[in-house]
Each structure stands twice: as structure tokens, then as C-alpha cells.
Length: 499
Image (cartoon, rainbow, N blue to C red; front, side):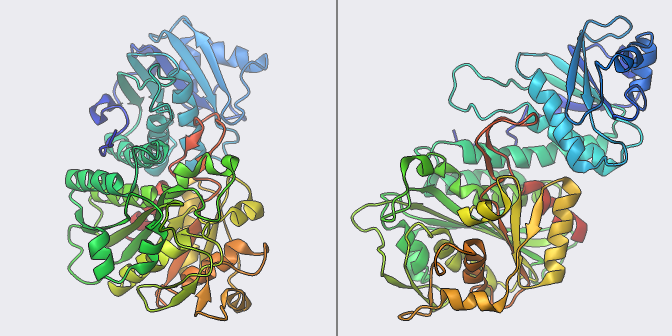
């Protein structure tokens, strides 16, 4: 079950075709995208002409509206070579962006992947930018992959071949690489905790690093002890599966040999029972997803390497299981983190920040110019922002603005929360330097971020709390339930923008 880097349909199953008229492409299904203000315009106009004005008539009758993510199948229409036409809505043309195209293309392929198909063609509009085409291609490759890793009868089956008509070949190639990263993160998160634990995650990371040319160094429990990573070791003590720290490095072509431009950090709690502060069963059921930050950062680093981006980058994933074994860390324990900061434990279910204390100190030592971390850190962030929006927290507004801009460009919803100095008072301990939770229920996402801030050494840093959007408990038009792969596309866009 260990995934490799390329978990979608084989990359050579995707190709560009800029020469063949879309109406004449022989395929099982042809996908055309329409806006609500011109349901038979743009790329759909040629299909409308080939079918004798069919799309215009259906639009006039209200059967096609162009509403965002609305999918209207038309079986065996005369005038085109495809066995089926699927019309997918994009909403308003004025509001069309990369995120909408990503989700619309994913909605189309998710619907069509419900049965086996030898070939599917999707028609890009010539007005789309290269980046918009890339995101549409990525969405199409993500939508056809489900969360049903363990089902004998799959709900989603990738197509034998996928043709992107009127799409530049370079954009198709880049889009499939981005999709590989998203699907890699999704697959890791969707794996059962019996199969994915710190050691097997590290093995998967080594496999992926070898495929894309990343340098990798894995710290086992002996190395963690030697490196004074006692916070990570404390969280992992209650499990029979010891923790690991995975370090990755990428030196892009022409990037030189100076300090890293970026450090990517991911929380990798491969299963979170809550420890001695035990979660109830309903709260524990989806806790295989508590390593989504590490999965996303591994996948983002692999994508950046596969794209050969000219940057120097390091990534670090802190991997542990939070269990209740006889050696489990306890409420009232005082732990000395790698930085020398002492942490009083008030809640063993606030373990992710304890793991990240050591991981952030490791990357701080490498003196990167900027740090971004991703973590399913707090339920409090979901209380504040809901299930679909990630929280942003920072010590450097300019850096946070870049992260937010990258997220919004690719359609990942984010919102910044404050980091006022007064919140520092809430994590001060009477017996240690800090405690691992704030005071009471209020502002929990912020006090968790203030805890992390103690370990970045003043380097520009932005924390992304993905507790809500990393895992969807119910399907959406563009995705099955389960892992979403957020924020892989954001991080890739962020690094591409600064490359």
C-alpha cells in the first residue's frame, strides 16, 4: 500500500491535442465547459454548431444553466464523435478563476469515473491562461481518484486515456504533476493507520524522494534522542511504533548553494487517540487524518522537485502516534524541547504542537529565509472558520500575505486570525516556560499558534491550520469524502511565484 509519486492514472495517459477539432475526437465522453452568461459560447460554440444548435436549445429550455459545477450529461448526440457529451457549468465568466476550473474539471471526471471508460476528452477554452489550464488538468486527474483504497469494487476508475483538447502540452504536463502531488497527499491520508505509521510513512517518503531527486534523511528514535528531540519522543512514548523525523532537501537548477529559500514543515501524527486525554470514539474515527500536514508538505516538496523549480528548499515532517501505552506522556509532565524550552503538559490531546516544537527547531537551525507549516492542529480553528477554510497565523505580515495570495489564486479558502501579544500570556506556565494549551476554550487556535511561534527563532513564518479542510467527511461534487490534499496546490503556487 506504500504509494509512489504518481498515484493518478499513468502520466502518459494524459495528453494534449491542439489539432483535432473537439467534435471529431473519438472518445467515450466529451466534456465541455460553459458559463452561466453564455451557455453555448466559448469552447462550447463549436460543439453547439456541430450538434445543430443543441446546446442553445437546451439552454433556452433551462436544461443547461451554466451554474457552477452543474453537470448535464447528453447521451449520443448527433454531430460529434463522442458517445456522450457532458456539459459542466463554471458560473459567471467574470468570476472564473483557477479554483473554479480545478473543481469543475474534478466534478466532471468524478462523475464519469463512476464506470470504466477507455477514453475521455475535455475541451479547454482558448481564453484560459496557461495557469488556468494547469489547474483544470490537475482537477481532472484528481476527480477520477476516490478514497476507496480498500474496496474490492472501486467507486472511481481512472480513464484509460485522457485528452485535453485545445490545451497547450506544457500546461497539461504541469497540471498532471500537480495532480500527482495532490493525489499522493490524499492517498497517504486515506491509508489506514495500521498501514501508515511513522516508520512506513518514512519508507514511503524515501521511495518518493528517490523518484523525484529529493535528498532525504530519516531520524529514528536513537537519532531523535541524540538530537534532543524529547518533545517528539514524549508524544510517541505511548505507542509501540516509535516516532520518526523525515528531512528532505531540494536544490533546484541554478539556485546556488546558499541558505534555503523556504522551509516546509508538516505535522505527522499518524493516529491521534488523544493519549491519556482520550478522545471519544466519534472524535477518534477520522484521526488517521492527523498527519495531513506532513502528507501535504511531502507531496508539495515532491511536486516542486518534479517541476524542477529553481529554489533551495528544505522540508521536515514530524511523525508520531499519540497512544495510551504504559509509557504514555502524562498531564503534569514537564518536557524539555530541543530548543531548551520547557513545556508543561496540560492536555495530551494537544500533541501536534508538542511534536512541531522540535521539528520547527530543526528547520530553524538551517536558517531558511521563510517557514510555512501545515497542521491539522485545532478543533478551535474549525469552530472559528468552519470545515472549509484554513486559518493563517504569522509573525511576518508580508510573508503571510504571499501565502494567502497563493491560496486564493488556486482556490484554497484561507483566513488570517490575529496574533496579538496578549495571547502569549495564556500559554505561560507557573512551573515551566510554557504550557501546551491556553486558558479555557477561547481562542484555542491562536494560543496554539502562539505556542509554535516560540520555536521559529524570529524567522518569517506562517502557520496554516488545516484541521477543517484537510479531510471531508462527506462527498462534494468535485471530490469523494476523505482527504482533500490541501494545501499542496497552495504551497506549489507559493514557491513557483517566488522561484
